[in-house]
Image 1 (cartoon, rainbow, N blue to C red):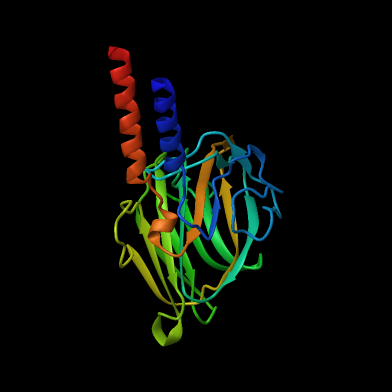
Image 2 (cartoon, helix red, strand yellow):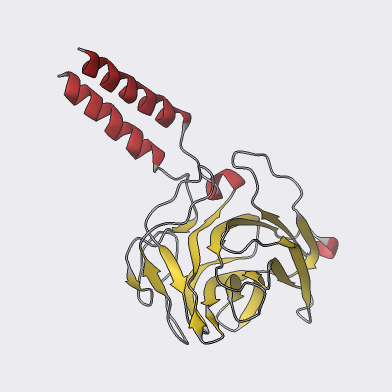
Length: 263
């Protein structure tokens, strides 16, 4: 009976620790192999598809602090590997997005990178978040759709996993344009207000996402990774952490095991 109680506590704790908030869209890439045609996750409007070389899902998730993660991760180790996936058309309210990225090899050249872009269709790009050239870079399309607002964050350390978060507030910018905030490695559980980078006068309505990467540098193929793509209505939704009750249950389970072994 005691063993059963310990098992039940541990199972409940593990289940709680992998429960996401109510996400608008999420893909943790749980099925290894070619990403093209995969329909895992939730909240998207179709499968992943490629117009160039396809990406590959490999085992082992990226991690950041206590962020809840599942499944594997997307790997790019050649040139011009990319995949699109449809999302519900989004042009009003406030939308949050987050993702994990890791670039290896020589990160200070253009051809070695990992990136995420929001699009209208598959040709009209609205934002671009990239780790390349030793930096985290943010490209945001202006409201007139004539130019990019380009910002670079602090330098990127090769091989680190970076947690990128963006918030789009539609109609909150100058003259009713869109206001976009970006954060690099924000604290989990924090109350985010102004971004590390804020871009006004933007036009970023979207209905699809593109993930892309390249690892072809100097004749070598260096794997770079993208993981844990989330869309939601708040920071908490795109940065879920284990619930406090999960930690308590794990503690109880551990205490019960210790007491049982002492008898």
